[in-house]
Length: 285
Image (tube, rainbow, N blue to C red):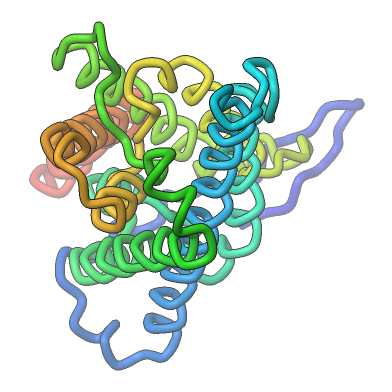
């Protein structure tokens, strides 16, 4: 790839070629330490994510519990909870991007798999590590604050009263679309080559996307947009209501991630058109 050259005060874009798609099944990955290191990084990152964020949710609820000398306007509020989720994603993506890609979310992994950015083997291992990390993170919260944990809902996601199942599902689909679309845009290698003179830190817009989606959807579903986050909290809290609504927090994010992958990869980047053009060119030779 060529370097940027400044001509007449304007930057010329770098040479760019699309990276080859990841193989559907890459058994060779299983023989490499770098693969297992990435899986461990996803596990630890998701553990830390759930530990900090669920503690924030429980702390807010305990500080606003008027029956326990709390104040209605006490605590960090919904804004603070949204900052906790968005801020932790920014920190953890920044820390793990160079090791595992910093997915920390099965919906993100699923979207990247559909776009052929990761193999099926890596996607499965990442999702398993993320779910296990989420369970362990919530388990630590329960171990350290067992009395508050059950009393204040354990940070588990469920549909709020007054909202229909369709509304909750739509909130999860659209919220995850915003997140995964941001991930694709912030990490697009073509954009990095074209706009290399613009210092864009990819974890920053991703964290802001999580923050904004939480502001909009906390009153509806508590904001899932991350199946591992919802699964870990549901497993440790283990109450009927979160389990009854739990399917929303898998189906919605996976649909949203799939739409984001199709939109970015096949419409904005026109991958299907490029593949067809390449096929026609090779056939004409």
